[in-house]
Image (cartoon, rainbow, N blue to C red; front, side, top):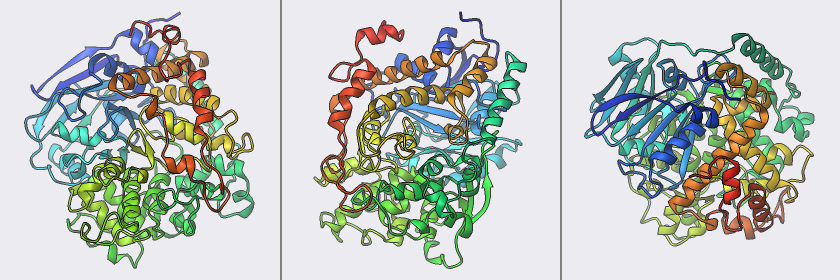
Length: 637
């Protein structure tokens, strides 16, 4: 049933050996494109074939794969995404970190579906790509500089209109375990330490310009499906959601499906109201489920007091990004040990950053959260792991495990000054920042209090307490890249009346289904947020089929997602992961909240995990059976 593809994909890989300073262009096996679609799935297959899972993340033998999807760079709404796949510096797992902006489409316009980086440059370098011209250049001038200055410098040096830059900041150079790769200054391949791996390769940046278009195999069918998808987003069932109105705030369905208009008006920080209302807003290192100052940080507060404009990624029709400025009385947050070339304006925070740098650390000062978020962008760090790790340190400090002799300032919950200063200190590994740079798990283990680590597989949790949303417990525990909400976001059903958020009923089954769907979604090159704005995976399948000329069905896509998920599981098992890694911290399993909507609730993972394994076709130890692998076409691996 598979025909030769004539569009969507370029069919080409750019492979760069940083050690030798060479590059080559290769063809992608057609059956791999069909079986994995692109993006995360296709990159996973190359990782499985080419990288020993036991390799050290910083070893030259670890490879980095930048992967677009067949809809990246097309006019499909939000067709801006690319993936970075490697062995994560934070987790030791196969990691798949996703970013938007304009860099991914530009790589596609240069003619490549994938960029594979091998080896290690002998000195600080950057990669320059202009269509088929590929060059490794000296980056000594940029080493040590922040993301903003690096991008501006490369644009000035190269002098090419529409040049796009992906780079690391000082955090990546210093191998902070949760360093990001930043593109377009404020968009991030953010989780699991992909920036630290890039830093270990002495690669500061990738500057790319492409002049080619993306061919479409069936233009008429493609445009028909595109306009149907746009219409669905415009007719989103909840366009009237407004977190300022009590009747809207009281309706879980509108909170959880805010729609395109609400995302544009309030950004993703509108979600703070929802998690607060269900007792699932992790506060002070998950010691509580509600934050008394949540309204200082939500979407209304950002829009009404700090927002300058909205901002969109390539082909985006949502524009959930926030361009923001500090308030007039924020001078106390402008003093840094390392002077920056910006002062009063930046982007963000998104929901996850607002939570991690705010409620999780007990900080309710919006200016402090904004400043820390901008520092994370400029220094190149994941704000989720940054805030979560600092929250763990604050708990260690308040319980007397970490003392004043070990820190340059009191690390108390609620300290805005500590939030801003320690964010900067972490990127440069200064003082106690050197401990924070290792992430919460390694820090907790070092101080002999592993219980302060709130995460799984070495990666800090995002902004949903599973005691408020039970399904997130099994979703976190089983995620292949460590704790993540983007693989199966259970609050969508748990707060909408479809399922009780505090019971385990049906949660494992739903998580398996959503993990499969989100995985194939990641392969397309479309942002996941289209799902919150009225589109669905079902609406994307005909677009991929028309773009590539391959007659995909929804059933095919679910199968492709399941195949990719199992491939990642095999990679992790070969890396040394076991059933013991599919777990959660004792705090979530044994310690209920003392107040709020999730009072008295703990996560019943023991009830959900066996059902999850059964639904996956894995044995009791979480290993895919031979029958399941054969069904997915993985029997020979």
